Amino acid sequence: MKDDSNPTSRKQDRRDFLGISLGLSAAGMAALAAAETAMAQGIATSPNKLQSLIVPGDTVLFQGDSITDAGRSRETDVASKPNHQSAMGNGYAWLAASQLLIDRPNDNLKFFSRGISGNKVYQLAERWQADCLDLKPNVVSILIGVNDIAHALNHDYDGTLETYEDDYRDLLNRTKDALPNVRLVICEPFVTRCGAVDDSWFPAFDGYRVAARRMADEVLATFVPFQSMFDAAAKIAPPEHWAADGVHPTPAGAALMAHAWLKAIGA
Amino acid sequence: MKDDSNPTSRKQDRRDFLGISLGLSAAGMAALAAAETAMAQGIATSPNKLQSLIVPGDTVLFQGDSITDAGRSRETDVASKPNHQSAMGNGYAWLAASQLLIDRPNDNLKFFSRGISGNKVYQLAERWQADCLDLKPNVVSILIGVNDIAHALNHDYDGTLETYEDDYRDLLNRTKDALPNVRLVICEPFVTRCGAVDDSWFPAFDGYRVAARRMADEVLATFVPFQSMFDAAAKIAPPEHWAADGVHPTPAGAALMAHAWLKAIGA
Image (cartoon, rainbow over all chains, first blue to last red):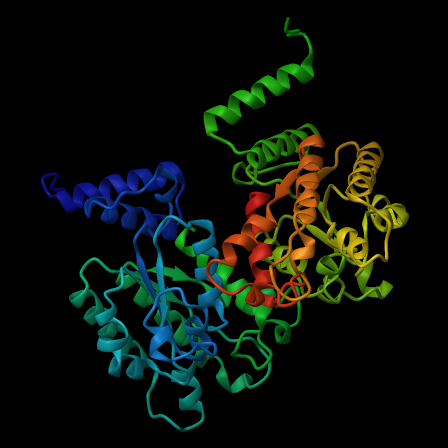
């Protein structure tokens, strides 16, 4: 029996109704939830911003491995400031951030990146206090997983898929505990079928993708389906065009990623 | 006195009404007109495609100079086929096309590029029959102008701003005469304030930008405001980051351009 006196349930009902009438995707529903949160927090939003997960005044943190790192500077004088190109690197994080900054110049958006090449989930956890929680982000976008499997395949790491999922769940719950209003974006780990990525990666790799998707569902995060995007991209140009070594995007691959990320957050 | 028996006038009235109710921009109005044309031609469109200038089945041609060329292959075996990466180059044209192809895999979109490095408007005109009209595009996107001014500044060309505008107007009218239902996209010529672009370019360059905008208004084309985008970009990273020599975009600049182009056409 439905308890109509429960405000959370009523809010969910209204959101379901709006979502159905507007034909919203899961990402759209997440954006709607984010807009409600933003409104509840008294953040002024104009009607055309209600579609976006990112609202005026937000601090947005990109986290992950080398794909997010993308050659960013660690120098404190730049990395401590938001929206600094050299501190954001040359990958999807900077491309997505710069496009939002140009589209919404008056929204006071603040972007940071703390991706570090080679990282697996447990290494994010080791530096999470300084490199996430202390920045008090409103939005945290995470892309992690390719090293969790690659280093296991190389026998440099004894973590398994279960380790990945357990560590990831702990990290997300820790984030939500420390930042109760945080909006989460979980990016699907991806590879292209070329370079260092051979048949030995499959079907194991699919397990990591599915686990990331499950994490997104569990914590009501916006999910960015990078693998399905790269699969579609491989139908229109060779996989090497998008990520020559199978893992690290070319500039064309990074541009696609930024586009998919912005689409997922409802830019 | 208004003649209500005139179907064109009634169509325009309805479009104005819809545009005002929906709060559409000039680009939105152009997209609405394009959707009406598409519907009149019996092209099936799903409701969420009505926002886009580009409808299922479209052949889209990018035309221009080196910025559109972007190292594309001229080999007939690839350039005669649509959606071929090497024939589309590595610039904004390919990035925009690939993002649309990935987002709308079932829409049978066909993209071609015929940008040639160094071209001015009169050189587009010289090859327009083979490199535009014969391809029977539904959408033609043109970015031209930077050589028209640069070669004049270098004293390699005796064309003036008036030559640019007259030649451009002739080219557009010729296109509309040959392809009455064509939808046009006119891209704003742009520079970044660095590299080869010094003070001698200004204020003359602004005249070319304004002329392109005027052309777009005259022929009811969708206008892509690249210069205002690059001006905004220069506030968040040095101009060299976006186009190191002042004219040719870096990969980051090309990604911004693709984003702006897709936004303008209502992707």
